[in-house]
Structure formats: C-alpha cells, structure tokens
Image (cartoon, rainbow, N blue to C red; front, side):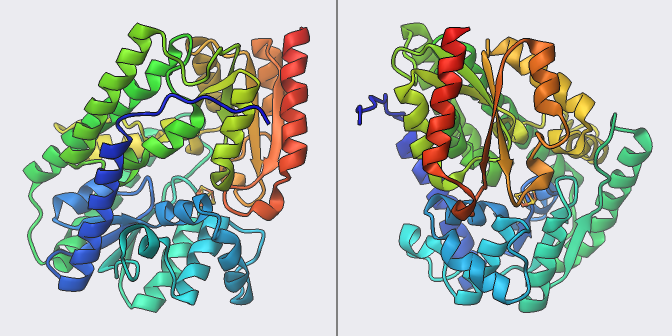
Length: 410
Ligand code: SF4
C-alpha cells in the first residue's frame, strides 16, 4: 500500500487543549457542583444556557467520539436490547448503550470516570426528532427536566411565523432555566455570549474557506476533527482563540501553496454525515488517488452568521431555523451548487447513512438533479455515522477508485 504523505496541522496541540478543557471543566462541575450542567443538542439553545452560567455538554459529540474510536458497535446492541431499534440513529443507540454499560470514552481520553450528570436537558428539533427521544431517555434516568424547542423542518423558506414561534419558545425557556440555574437572566450577558459565538462562526467559516485555494488547505477528515471547538466551545472565547491560531496556519499554507493532499488532482464535495470510524481510511483512499474532499455540508453546519447581539432572541431563532438540514431540497441544492462553484469541485460524494435519514440527502433524486444541473458526476457511498456494520470498506474503495477513473477519463 502506497504511503500517504501528510502535512501535520500544527495547531492540533491547541485543539487538544481546548477539547480537554471542555471535558475537564464539565467533570469538575458534575463532581463539585461548582457550576450547573446543561446537556444540549448540537444546534440547540446553547448560547442561552451559557449566558445563565451553565456549562454545556453535547450528547451528539459524545456519540461521535464513540464512532471515532469504533466502540459504538459494542454499545448499539445494548440499546437494541432495551427496545431502541437498530434502524434508528446510531448516535442515540451507541450513546444510550454506553450509558447502560456504565462506560465512556472520556475515561481513556481524560481520566474522567463518567459523563457529567445534567441539571437540565435541552434540545431543538430543527435537526431531527431523535434528539427529543434521546433527552427523554436521560430525563427518566437522571430525573431532571427537559426544556426544548420544537422547530418545523423541510421549509422552502424560513417563514416569519416560524421564527416568531421559535423566538417565543426561547423566551419561554428563560424562567425555567433561571430557576434551575439559581440566578437571574441578564440580557447583556446573553448578547455577549451570542457575539462570541458569532465570532466563532465567522472564524470557523474562514478556516473552511481556506480550502478554496488550489491545492486545498484541509480535507473533510481534518475539518471533522477541527470543528470540535465550534461545536462544543462556541460562545466561549477559548474557541475563538483556537481558530485564530488555526486560521493563521492555514493562511500560511495558502501563501506557500501547501495542500492537504500532495499532488491534488481532484476536488470533491461531501454531502451527509461523516463515517466517524473511517475518517482516516477515507482520507487515505482519497489521498492515494490525489483527490481532496475540499468542502462538505456537515462541517459548515456550525456557521451561524445570522446571530445579532442587538436582537438576540429573534436572530438566534432565525439562525437556528435556517440550518441546512431544516430546508427543503430546492434550498439545499442551491446551497450545494454555490459551494461547488466557490470550491471548484469536480465530483459530488453523497453518504447514504443508514440510520440518519434526516442528514441523508440522496434518497429523493437530489444527486441526479445536481449532477445534471452542475455537469459533474456523483457517487453514493452506503454507510453509517457510527454503525460500521452498515459499511463495506472494500466495496467503498472500489467505488471511489472507479469514480476517480471515470472523472479522469471524461
Ligand atoms: S441528525 Fe441524524 S445523526 Fe444527528 S441526532 Fe439526528 S438522527 Fe442522529
């Protein structure tokens, strides 16, 4: 097997420090009760919780770690045995399975004995209904309240009445959260957190944007790892400090013409969830074929440019209603088409993730429509975010090789 040369990202040291801080603070809060802990879905009302002094733990992030270290398959059957189907979100089943077994990857990574006990469970159905079912499992286990937002999905456009409803739901959360936090809400603190979170979005978007350069500065696999602080530390100044360091490094790459893939010849778009346990293998496969997955929908999901500290509730509601996953196919296709042009993409990769229909977009004709509209081919990879039993490495490599060959011959 040909060895793949990689240019290491130097900022990885700082990345690890920020992620460690996030988990260690949560662990300390859960053990010493020095702070309250809110669990939150990845595009849930985290900024509101932060402004009330909660530390925020993201249950999907924990599940993604189970996928990355490939322990998810040990835990999914445990959740299945408790009545959670193998066909539903494997984030949910692996996370609940790990809880039922009393294990967490945080032990090995940070010496943390168990996941931090929540004081409140937050969700937003803007991404899927599964997050609601997920927190309700833990509500019974920990006997803590669930507070959340119900957002309609598959919207042609973000309607004002929907934004008003979500704004009202956010405002209604405040007295409940004040009671749990044991302190009053301060609108100025909320504005400040929102401004910090927006800056994180801006920096993260700029980081991703450096991959427009030829050759691309980073791959999809790199971005999946380095988006960690944008997910779990947004609204905290430490995330912004980290992205300033990473951005400086990537700008240097652009200036010096350093690419993530040596001898880059092809540039792809990744649509759908990552296959967490195969990030390295996928990166090696594309790298060997001189192909770079330069841009993705997934890694841009934590860009909330619409946050406006002057109008915090409404702008946050609008931003969280506007996420890609909540739009209909017309909006999604326009979004992808724009990125394809900006990043000079010559092939689309769709991941058909078995257990996440909400974040799988190739089941209703989108891939064909986009290929026709943009004049570039597409490939569908069958797999899953966490359940590797749905993924064939051999078949996938063969399909990617054939796809690259097809592009080279055209
Ligand atoms: S979007 Fe998909 S992977 Fe994420 S929580 Fe919902 S069902 Fe699970």
